[in-house]
Image (tube, rainbow, N blue to C red; front, side):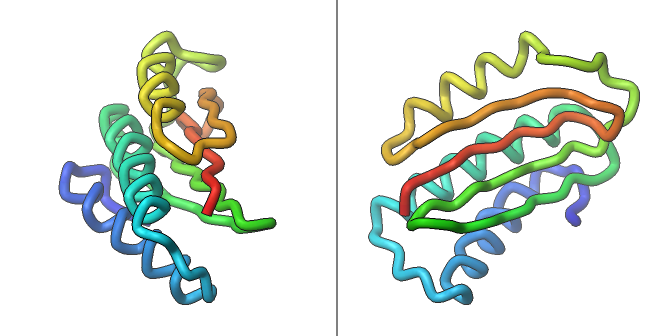
Length: 117
């Protein structure tokens, strides 16, 4: 859990890369760059929801990582938000992307991306 603030982007990037290394993943430089860039885009979008906190969740399987970011901002309009299209286009432009998505529910906006390691 992180405070929803601009500085959280750097903290999230460090935590994601550290966790992947702790899990034993040997990341080539290109994968590190993609994971950091995608994490930045997802966290910046969640922070823009102006909630009090955000959370970043990871899972790995078959040489891929799923990065999930929650904004925890209640009261957003449920469903897909038009502002989510911008971040999805930016995420899919990154090398090594397998899939991504965003939606909004009672617990805030959820943004996720699956990246090849």
